[in-house]
Amino acid sequence: MSKALRSVLIGLAAAISLFGLAASASALTISPSGAYTATATGATVLTFGSNGQRLNCTASTIVATVDSAGVGSSASGTTRYSGCTNALLGTFSVTQSSAWGVNVILTTGNVGLAVTVPARGVTITSGACSFTASGTVTVSRAYAALPAAVAVTDVFPTTSSALTVDSVSGCSPLLTTVGLAATYSGSYTLNRAVTVS
Image (cartoon, rainbow, N blue to C red):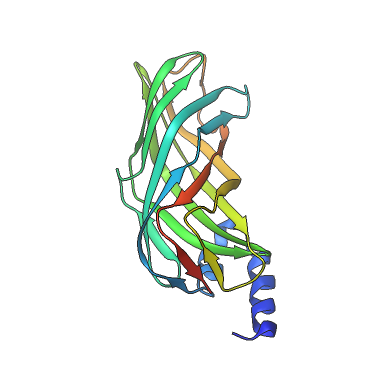
């Protein structure tokens, strides 16, 4: 790919919102394609915007399969969270209740992985409390240029997230209403090296 064409593609990708991921992903080549596991380097945290309450998970892994264009999915039940707690309601279980969309994306200077969580794509429970959430989470890391050689030691922190509570039952005082915004944070490494070009 010529430098001029690469610059045009990077500029176009930077102008595309998180909800137009397929267009940016189509400009990329991922090698090798297939299954990847992203493992959190520490805790992952879900923070609720209205009250600042947090759901903290000590460990998590996201398993996804992508094609050579960087478009793929994470099958229902393959993503795992453990050690999840909240100061108000104690221990929680977090379940991937539907398949998630996964796209390798390109923004200016960054190679990223965007995970699209469909409505009721996550079910979170603690005793009588149960709620579901959906939205988009992006983790990314800056590279100088394409092709980018991604090593297993490269850390991808969360760079943006927009999650919404879709349903809630029995979660007072942590949660009381549907539509509450939440943000996700965490950093991940991949289980194998990949080249993005």
